[in-house]
Length: 329
Length: 230
Image 1 (cartoon, rainbow over the protein chains, first blue to last red):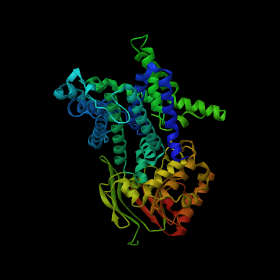
Image 2: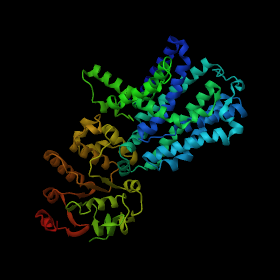
Image 3: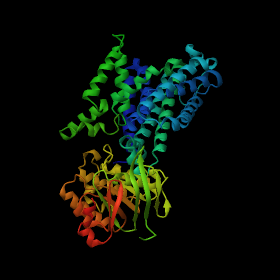
């Protein structure tokens, strides 16, 4: 495998170039593209948990909410520097991983999924009720007017937030490319395949799972922070446990691999954006697509594109699992 | 029996909840030996290996490896200390390539000398980019052995390595066993008695959870005298 520096940045550059091109081709879709980018980071976070380690969580909105509320609370009550707000969200994501990880990753399957759901429900209760004095409960926090100008890119302006988000997404994709090819990534996938085998090889799988879990919480928190900065507003709906299904569906639609989460996000948000313009219950279309993917396209959007690409390249398709197996959920 | 054994297991008892399955099992493995455990299905051979490798906890008894009690160590610590276990199910990481499978073995042991390892299994050199899931049973067994040889372990436990393999793969593995035994100690569970006769320096026979016989004479091993204990 090509492990030159260029090979790590080539794909992310193409992906960002496509998003930037779309921004100019469809100028009225900038918000949509911003959402695809932040939601994409959120789905990458979930893919580490689900696609790599095979752990399903029904509490992902909680980790997104940690980043969103950390930045929001800082900007609404404490400071004005957006970069500090993002830095604090990353630190809180790290602390969440270090704090919850050792307890939660001991659980498997249903128990892991449900303890995260329970945590998410508690998080919602906290921001709605217990932390009401600083979160404003259901009314949410508004703080856009408190933003100070930032150097290079003025993050008070949505257009600059878009560019900033592109830079962050690029860095996340480079990191994700590295993870996909690294021994750490192989180790996380090894846990999904056979934790016992990893122990036979001499790996402390507890530490590995904890590392994967903490990377997930950091990235989810970062995505939440970007969301909070772009909209200048956060309310408890961001941490609603019911929204955990969105993350899982988008991850499933993407189908794993470095770019699966972005394609999964595009599919999910695209349907939401397109179908909702003529039909209230856009979830119906997502549901139907998810069923089709589960039965017919287990490699998801990215896996299917890779299969088609391989077909054109070699004249015959690779077996579906050889493609989707990369780290598909 | 020598006192400076590489592995010395004494009076090992193991239960699954209240079901007692291994009874006072005692064995010794000396450096450089190929020790084969034989026994019918249900004789608790795999339970014995899994306990030594740290995947099951014993009720009583001691497991000394290089003179150190490893009875309470976690499996990964035992592996890093130089005792590798190759499970019976030939489970490689199906989604990872052969190369990535080896990288995982290397990272854990910090041993990246693949040439030394692949010398025993030259076929793997041609399969580096193939996914583990697309390998045949024999190729998987080779990959597992190559992976376990990384880090130059002192002792490799192999649970029925030839089970379900085509005859030509068994011949290849037999040749590999002989070469590998010159650089490391091996303990093998094997039902293939002619193969056992050919490679073993010492044979332990197990029956119904007990070690019922120890055969050290090469002539007796080659004459398959241990068959009467099975």
